[in-house]
Amino acid sequence: MMVTRKGQAIILELREKYGLREGTKLDVIDTGEGILLKKALSTGNLIGTSNSTYNQLKKHLNKVRREDI
Image (cartoon, rainbow, N blue to C red; front, side):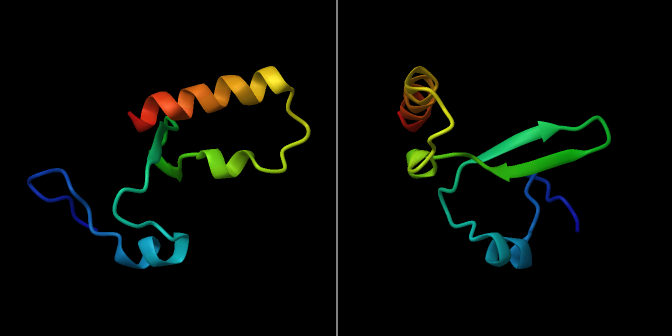
């Protein structure tokens, strides 16, 4: 894989495998050994999460809403 002059990399096979579409938000994590790209959590990921407290869910939801602006 090569990075373009604009800093872009073509990851077509991985986009298809992980369902990454235009507009998908990613978390970029520096692991110390490289870069890890993960799909960012969305409000849909909160459905059915019963091990989190109300305040934890509210805090995360507010963070996601701020990122959507």
